[in-house]
Amino acid sequence: MPIIQHPSLAQPLDIPPDQGGTNRDELITNYWQHHPRFRFLKMCPLNSRFFDIGAGSGGMSFWKDWQTPVRLDIEMHGCDLSPGQFADRYAAFHVMDFDGTAFPYPDNHFSAALSSHVIEHLRKQEGLATELMRVLRPGGMVYIETPTDESCQFPGREFFIANGCPTTTINFFDDHTHTTAVSRQKLKDLFIQQGFTLHEAGTIRMPYMEDRMLAKAVAQNDQELGSYGLWSKLGFAHYAVFQKPVS
Image (cartoon, rainbow, N blue to C red):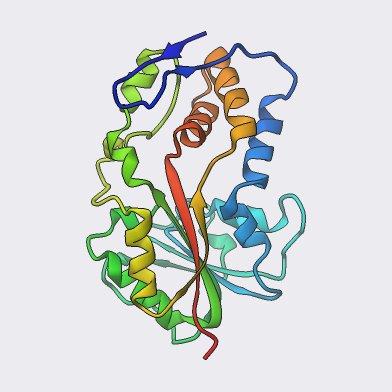
């Protein structure tokens, strides 16, 4: 199995052989069940009006009744630059460029909001925090996820592929639509300056699972598992949950 070395890596990645056991579907299910993004959706207040910013295909709508608890009480709204494949699963889906543009909702409208891998694409990053402060209800919470600024120094995806490890984006600049990486401190500052309080924050890691995912990814040339394994192993993304003051 490959030992991947690169000057930017703190230590070589020694990917173990696949020992079988847990199958691919179980690995992916376990990965998402323990992901803070999934937990945020599943644990939002009862009968929440939920705003999915940068909803992409709209796949997050399936999480409401995938695994437990089933959350059919959540009313999901979404927006993105184009209508996703599953946009019709949302109570409303707006096609818009939200880089410095106001959301088409009144003040104090949402109980919860989520923006995953969006803020690094924006030129006016502070505008996202400003608009979320407006559209969230008092006490409402928002989950933000974005690549770490350290990811700017990671080897690119082609390096990992050439060394036998399939993956998608791993270096920040593998995605040419990224503008500016948002450090942990900058993310906190952007939202705290708008009046939010920080509820929780962390780097997204799955130490128990990452080697299993990487081993199976290499053995089966599985790009999805390789991405999840590398993202965890290298700490590709971080997240923060902020709350709008009650009064």
